[in-house]
Length: 100
Image (cartoon, rainbow, N blue to C red; front, side, top):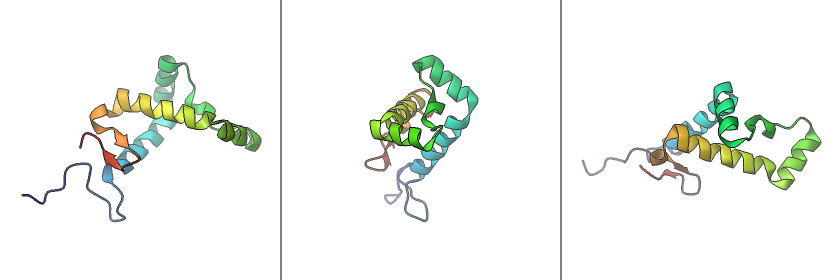
């Protein structure tokens, strides 16, 4: 069938790529899971829970300095390489899976 949509390019009823939703859900799960937190820390020396501000001012400082973005980017890269699979890497710019 020539009209078959490649895996990863299918969309939800809202028009969002299915793989994007799956990836975001996986990141959310992994951030809150203690075994992922521990493994990330062991592999990188970084603490993913440090992105959760202890105070409003701390959150503003972290955001202004780029700290939160840097840690989350490193976590998502680590998560993709070690658990999601590079062949399913989510490209937030294009909204597509690179391997799909």
